[in-house]
Figure 1 (spheres, rainbow, N blue to C red):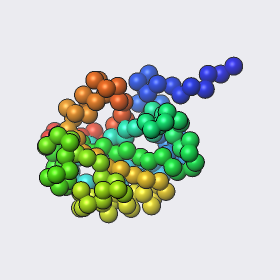
Figure 2: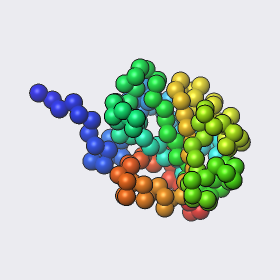
Figure 3: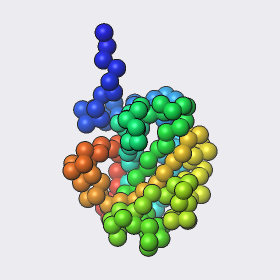
Length: 163
């Protein structure tokens, strides 16, 4: 008998995490994943790191503990964390949890908190056929969330020196 419990993201290699992400969010289509992150990278300031977090990494929904897309095809969102000080400048001053270090999420509910990035976010949603959320943070906060709160992540593009 096989254990069907999702493997803990902290126990997975980078290749295993990437495979999970491609399978869950991109229907196993590596080309769509590459198109997604290239489009994202082209629309961001140079040196911005791109990280995926949340249920696409853990295969466990925060809200109810269910699996990614357990509520139906394309119902789970992609939580994209953008790492770097330049990209954080796109958020309005009141859209920070921690000033200059960690923003609130740019999403359908709050599309005006980073107006210059919202068209890119919306175009990515059309590309992948699911909700996409952006949040910007510093490398320090990203690392702290993993170590202190056990929130794993997958680095798609390494951040530049200013992160």
